Length: 378
Image 1 (cartoon, one colour):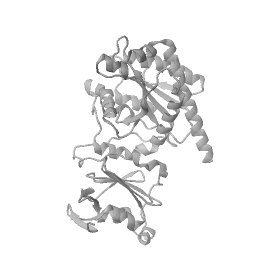
Image 2 (tube, one colour; image 1 turned 120 degrees about the horizontal axis):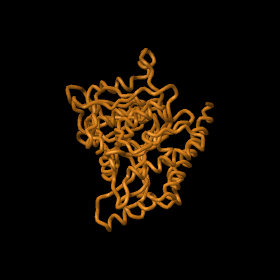
Image 3 (cartoon, one colour; image 1 turned 45 degrees about the horizontal axis):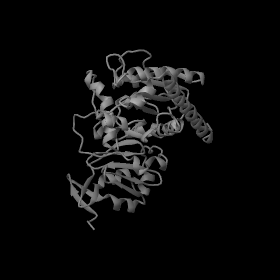
Image 4 (cartoon, helix red, strand yellow; image 1 turned 60 degrees about the vertical axis):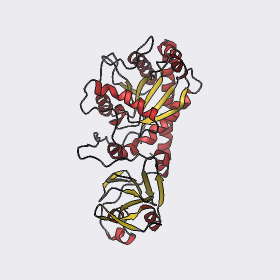
């Protein structure tokens, strides 16, 4: 057993797992992401090796030193332990600003932990967004739905043998708007014709409209042999979270490439580790509702012509979702590179069926949010 403390970066460091035992916290280590979580009765603190910040109850806190992995142990600055987990007597006496309310335990499941990486560079900037209005999306009644047909104008998106992604998603988006309006929703579209809208502007529009749910529509594609294209088909629902597979990373890079291709300001194909970490607090506000809507999408598409691709759910750094201050998903309707999927997505009957299934998911999601609010007495 390595000793309780050592010195690094000119500070005294202590073993994180031993700290958790001393303060009565549960300890969770995620070796692949190189991140760990300490959970007490009141606080949830998330750390990442090499990152000089911690996320405590959704708020980002500067650390005296980045956590270090050495000799098989995780080391954090003793000074940071005292700041984040003060002794009860000191915490009671101090007139410090109270910590934010802890998120429910379900929101700190190990599988959803964010990845760690190398220390942040000085020139890296955090992703920021406008302050949301009053009661935030995801906690209030679901009324305004923002539909985002991907690509458009000079950006055709993925190309099939007979169709373009931009045309399919616009057609489905228009039908979805009609269905949702019939169901009583206020519906906005980032584009309702063949025009090019920058990725960053799409989320900004959704925020201006004070949306309750953001749905970005796309068609998937692979560059492979004809035989491989026949095999790969199906729909996939993506949420904004650190990618868990190389496939998810590749999908995000392809969808984000349009921003770099057309010279969008601050464009990038991937989020840096520090940007993921600083996004943590904001993601906590909306990600559970994004997952909730994703579950409704899976239910709505069960039994449909286009089946799930793999598990049907994924996550990655889609730039179109980054600035949306509301629950949000990116829906890859099917593979335009697969002739069977393409034909169905091109057909009027197929487009109507897809729109109706998405609309059903929105309605059941709205009911679920309403039911949850009732349990809270709202």
